Image 1 (cartoon, rainbow, N blue to C red):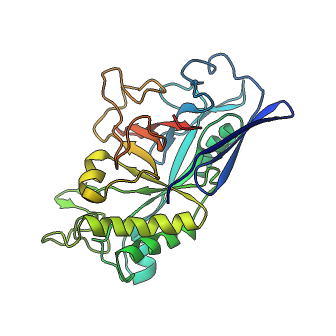
Image 2: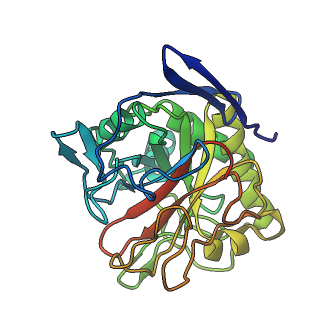
Image 3: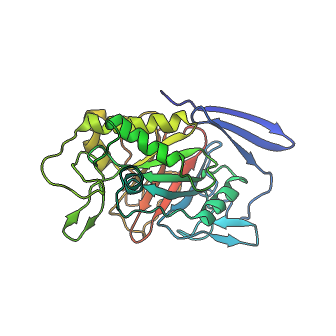
Length: 318
């Protein structure tokens, strides 16, 4: 089920209207003729896409944008408040909440969605080509104990929960699946059930992994199909160091949007917008057969050194 990019340009009342279909869902962007102030209108802030745009943004663990009353824009907090705030992805839920609902568990877990930040990104994206806001969910693999009836069904059950718990405006119709190992707390390594045997709450139960690459992919496919059939576009937040070995020969996701992260990089170095690399030549590493410049590789969390900072691209294929 490949995604299609259909770009149409036409003028209406002196304003350019761009209609873009990332999936079966069409998303309209209205580009006002109002000019940005000179400190925003720069080679980096307005990237020659030809119609797309690279901008900085944040997610749940990042600082809030600032409002500039002089020009009426919300500005990205990092590296400095001088670019429109073009990207926000908020955590709307984690798999432990699904376990509580379906199996009567008592796991801790809560989402951290910030409606004010989402509205700020949506406001800016109504004026320029930008991604706006969307939501992400911490997806559990088949190694987390579940009674959904199988690996594919476990992914579908989580997707159904997500669809019934969306929190805020989702102007780009993207729902991100957060696929990562899980945190370490003291001597306990928590697992999200990807190629690992875990309990309902994500705690490693010990022993050899009970599930492999094919089962991991079946769970992801159940989530992907259910979200897509509901009219949304699925994106994946992960890294090459985790996704590729976890899914093995089932890793390729050519029709899925990607948002990659670098867990070890500090916030002190900021990539220039548009090249997905630092001046030190360290670059974003996408996964699942995708790479820099691929049409679905659209976001990079370039640092989580104390806070999450992101760069995004929105528009026609790069």
